[in-house]
Image (cartoon, rainbow, N blue to C red; front, side, top):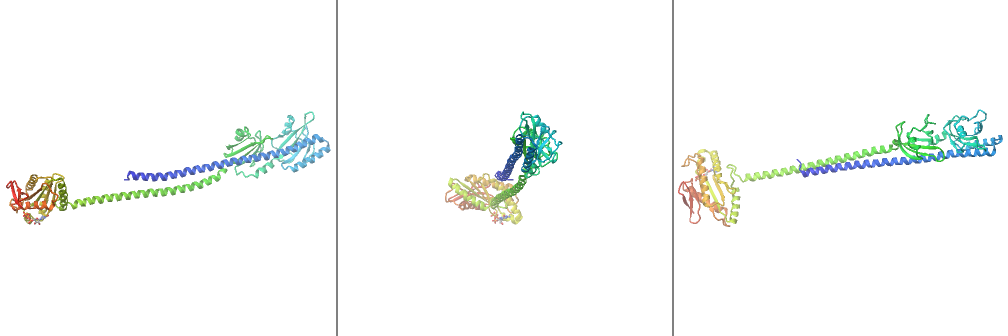
Length: 526
Ligand SMILES: Nc1nc2c(ncn2[C@@H]2O[C@H](COP(=O)(O)OP(=O)(O)OP(=O)(O)O)[C@@H](O)[C@H]2O)c(=O)[nH]1
């Protein structure tokens, strides 16, 4: 089980790794998105420039044709329509057409629709434009502005052309015919073809009323088709003079960045469009590459982060194991210490334990001027017991006696210890002579009460003798041997006087022992 501190360390390690990964993802996404926006902005700028360039080109193309028309009108007005004048005019038309590559032909048409003169040198009454829209328009509109009409097929070449025409007025202002320049649609197509607009890009030239003139790439049905239902016309080109719009095509579903621009001099507008997918194709492949790099980096970070967490866990586990081992060793030490202080047979404190305890107790009692009592207890005729009942029985007997003597260990400061062989010693701090003798008497009674049969003892049961010594108060120079020697002497007296009795060691000339069974108080020799 991990501690709170270790859990926190692991949590922070995981949090650190996760934060770096999230940060990398956020930075990667943000950077990628920024690149995408930049590329779109760049594409908008590109289509915008493209539409401006195409608008300028269209303006120049129509302006050159229109200038030629103005020149023809002036010549007709100035030179008249005599055969000689018309021959000169025809030469002029041929020269103009050869100089202006966008022109398919130049025409002068009278008020009845007949061709007066044309750049192709064609003659005959059958050559008429009576049915053409530009003729009908000029006949109906007195203005002298140039008119650009829907694309038509040329009657001379059969090619698709766009016409730009101007009305000729008679001196009284009535309709007196028109001049017309036919501009090849191919001229625009070839020009538009020179631009790299990708596979899904579009370039458009259309009349302001939405009639498509040129579309690149070319489509069979595109010439003359109406754009009024398309979003680029309906929502944008029909409303403002120029702008940029991102639109999904209703026809092919492609999203395009469109730039539209109306010509200021002619009723025409241009549309340049690039496919968003194609614009972003490089961004997409780069993003994929970056994504792969990012994922690889994140995988490496996660891998090493995981290794870090595993290392932390291993270290924590090792630390815990070491702590547990240390605790176990400390516990073992305590157990060993306790065992080292215990007698294995009786379970009592052993001699070493007693030696330590009495040294400590003497010092303490000397400091506090307290008393200390010691009972030295010895089993009577124990050799005979062993001889009679055997050594194992002797061991069992010693255990029982030890348990009986343990009753003396009433306070935590009291200590019962096996002093050696069949001798047991009892240390009673802060105990006076009377109390110590009483305790010794109690011990003797307890042992007798065990009633362990002993044929070698005149009393028929196992008995013990006790020598009691008391130092009251303890002096600084008292050493353990002093009181032990006193207790031993008192014990010797108890043995000498017939055993199964208590003797109290008295200082000076005589020592007195007390025994209830025998005389109340007897003295032992010093
Ligand atoms: N079974 C057993 N006997 C022990 C142990 N320790 C000491 N003894 C025996 O205790 C006996 C002590 O004998 P002695 O010192 O002659 O004294 P005693 O026979 O008890 O006679 P008194 O003390 O004079 O009554 C010896 O025979 C020791 O072998 C022990 O741990 N187990």
